[in-house]
Length: 135
Length: 481
Image 1: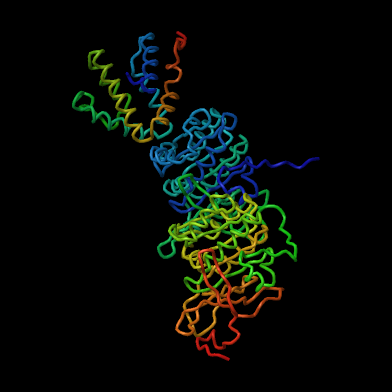
Image 2: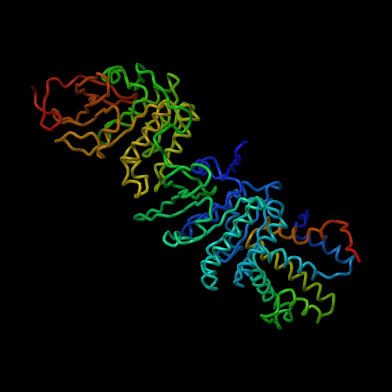
């Protein structure tokens, strides 16, 4: 028997489907999460968690940690790094980082609260057949 | 013209609404103040999670102080923390960055912006002390802070929000803080360390609009959250004072002792059974409860010395299993009298108990935190008075030291608090250690003044002959008269 997918993965997958339809990258998920989580734990709290995860990924994606500049905000840093890579590789690295980030968050505040925060952040994207934004 | 009706919000904290005179007044501006670790954030969360719903939203602003991640991590260990309420009914907002900028107007604007967007009716700011400290650091000074607090109070009242500012304060600075002037309600939490014991205290210092329960009360933070034990005052906790039929007597379960007391223990009386170790105090208590069970009078025992292997304990367990007797079996230390009385009162009301046994005074005193032992006599008075006013007749056991040359009724000098005294002691006669008992006092009633031998058998106490032919028994020098 296969274990049912975890709620955070379902949320992420749904949101990604919407983003793919719109030809947008997972950076949108990071931006939404940064806003929602930063509001709760503060910008500094978000940045601290984010860069901890970046350094955790150093073995697989050394390019993510190579150019860290304390004056550059987390999501801006990620956008700059991703832009230097092949789109497929960049997207995979971004999603891996997102997984690590949410797993770390769960270690700290538990799955229930984390899922509520992800839902708040990606809620509109994660709804199936999310309407396209006005052009 | 009708006066405004102030709606009181139930806090969800056991015992707290009683202190507040029914609950937190709606739209009030309150301060939860106290020392670090005194339970302010837990109290705020417990209130918030209890009250918040989609129709009554809450917003929790975190400022500098406990990192929000840690707060969320630890607070969700309590069962009241309902993650399902987050986002829909409860929103957490961090203001640390706004405050670091040092601009009070900016912080106020941010709070207003969030309140406008989420439309909460409950607003929490934790920790407000950070705001005060920021005023000092950024030279905004007391005037800036006062303006901020005033504005915040006005804004939140305008939004019909019930507001709680949570802050770490020490008494001296509290007097000069503008927050204390503006607040409608001030709740003070503190911790008292006496010897090795820590006791938590709560006081409703100020509450505009209606009467609060005065005094300092004890509370505990346990796995369920905060539980407050309002300080017992000598009045019935529930309903009107019980009235007793002056001729009604309760049998102790030993007919001969009933006869010695003039027909049993008068209803609504308190009696202390004093005696040295092994003299049969718990045996008599058990018989008192068994007799109650037999005649349909539910009983309660607060057992501070119960050992599961004793025969008496097995008899007590049988009574408890039958449902005729409730047991408060505590080996917990550092209790407050109010916790014990809270549990007893609740059980007396629930079981409609007519008989209460406290076994024993020394065990009870040992279970209390050292700070409460200093007021033990006063505490005992409140305990006995509260229980009898609820309609219970109270039997207390008290251990005396094994002294054989003088007469003592209790180690604590507490015997005067009770209406009746039954004394048990050992005497040496003809090379044997014999047990004797006597009724020392039954207030307002005639009673036997004789000393009787008695034995303890498997089925209980058996009263034997009097010691009429002896004198000097109580001074340790018996001789035939």
